[in-house]
Amino acid sequence: MKYLIVGSNSFSGASFVRHLLDRGNQVIGISRSAEPDQAYLPYRWSSCDATRFEFQQLDLNRDLAQICALLSDTRPECVVNFAAQGMVGESWLSPEDWYQTNVVAQVALHDQLRRMPFIKRYLHISTPEVYGHTAGWTREHFQFSPSSPYAVSRAACDLHLVSFFKAYGFPVLFTRAANVYGPGQQLYRIIPRALMAALTGTKLDLHGGGHSQRCFIHIDDVCTGTEQIALNGVPGEAYHLSTTEPISIRELVERVARTFDLSLNEVAQQSEERLGKDDSYLLDSSKMQRELSWVPQIDLDSGIEAVKAWAEAHLAFLQKEPLSYVHRK
Image (cartoon, rainbow, N blue to C red; front, side, top):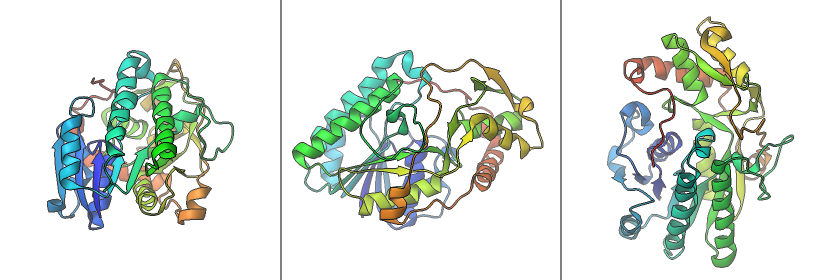
């Protein structure tokens, strides 16, 4: 099967590229930036056949015509879109950037994709941020209550795609995953950031004391579920990918610290809460188990050890990388 991956330089996008290549698929990847160092590109680590992967540097905001030409030339059967302007806290500083990338540019892309009959599946990688704070385990739905410009932009794009599904039969499917982690993740995310704090003797900030709760799911489990949705999911439907084991950010950082025989206070310090941060995301993923026979396989401790091994293997390079998010328009 031929896939086009939008946002192939992202952590999840690059990991999914490797997953697809390992299974014999042909993959085209596009991202707005040139390919980063191979430390962030899982498909450059494995023994998969790189001749089945093509990358082009194209930006949704500036290069729509070239993207459409690439689609027409390569005619992928499935498009998987990981591209989005991320980060909750930073979205308050220049919300127009988030709406431009996550709504305006996406709508323009989708309006072209719906006219391309060779596209049989369009998989949109959404986020649980669209729900806002969840009280208890929540099932898939589209009654949103977003809490930040980032979340509002993602919710708006999801609803726009629902309208395209209803009006045009556009073959969209949605995924919403819990907090994804794994080797190759950007350092401003909590697990690699905590590992780097332990490895380098620095401290990370625990916003609000780290009492918010999340479920953490390994990227390999997410990739397996994402492929199953792409192949066998029902168009118009959303699917959750999550474990059933919530943990507070404080407890998570403490668990990372223990792998180095360190205390929480040696790797973290308390700071004020971020604006618009939700207390918890608890995603009920029973639909995936019931309909697509998907169950996550990698436990959190094993997953942390895998990220630790990656960080140690690439430490000389990673020490030169910023530990905080750097915004790009």
